[in-house]
Amino acid sequence: MKNILITGGAGFIGSNLSLKLIEKGYSVTVLDNLSPQIHGADAANTSPLYQSIKDKVKFIHGTVTSKLDWEEALKGQDVVVHYAAETGTGQSMYEIQKYVDVNINGTAIMLDLLANTPHQVKKVVVASSRSIYGEGKYKSEKYGIVYPAHRVAKYMDEGNFEVKYLDDQAPLALLATDEESKIHPSSVYGITKQNQEQMVMTVCPTLGISPVAFRYQNVYGPGQSLKNPYTGILSIFSTQIKNGNGINIFEDGKETRDFVFIDDVVAATILGIEMEEANGEIFNVGTGVPVDVISVAKGLIENYKVEVPLTISGNYRLGDIRHNYADLTKIKNKLGFSPEVSFEQGLQQFAAWVNTQEVENDNYNKSIEEMKVRGLYK
Image (cartoon, rainbow, N blue to C red; front, side):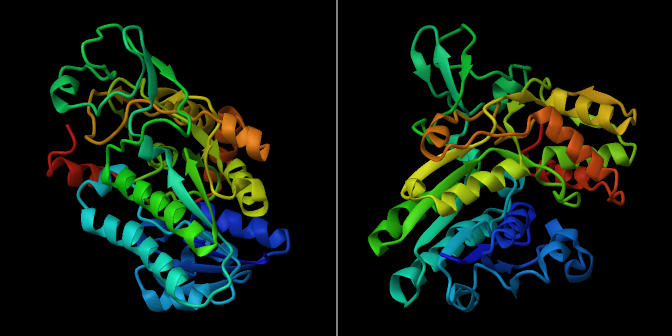
């Protein structure tokens, strides 16, 4: 299986995966629309992500919402790695049709073609997301293992940001989220990723194609778009710091995420492509370590050696989760994957790279205003 199609292959994860696969001797085709939100207005000439791959892959400037583009891209491919998607939890709550069209309909077109036209595809690897879990897995003193419902404005307005379960007043103990955990996304983005995953895992086996799904945690690292104000907390904070702007920490700053370095994500994905043990399986990809948001902000400020004010405001976005981090037992046991880059190491590498880049305009407040006028930001 030497011919690999990567949809969204000019994006952050896709471009890094492309380069590593080429290094290993694969022939890579990329289908990407060079979205201005990620690549800027003149992507063909100025996007570092695109520039890094344009002379090394067969590049198709197109979209997964086009059947014709899919038909061209699928020719001669042995493996499809499906990354192309609209990303951003907050934005998905008001760009609903766009997220559904790209993430769900784009995947449906691919599967329809695989089901009804000649091809040589043997494996489909789909990028799922930790967002499909919604709130993570917890232990209640009263009820045992529980999966709390989404938080509501009534309680967060009062500064009660931690999750509760029914009438249990004791604090819940956060646990690592394994692949058997409850699926209950709290955003349109999460819903669309759940649909992508389920369609691929359901349809492909009926076609004699091996599916693999990776539920990525928060991926970061050198090369991440610094232009996109809708997703990527490290990039957003970095752009604010480099512009000398203060950082508004949502909630109480104690909300946590599992931040996984780009090199580890690429390594895990290649195992999924190459190993038969991955076929038909769903895997978490993360570090298994929760990091709170205020630690992220302070770590970046320390690395950049730029002092900007931090405000823990109590503001919040509807659709955001409180905590989630990955249980990696399955991917370790089946594929032998263990992350090699700690958050501290990765943060240093990321900050060192940002220091070599031109300072981007800070458009984060624009994204916040879009949510505010729709009642999604409090």
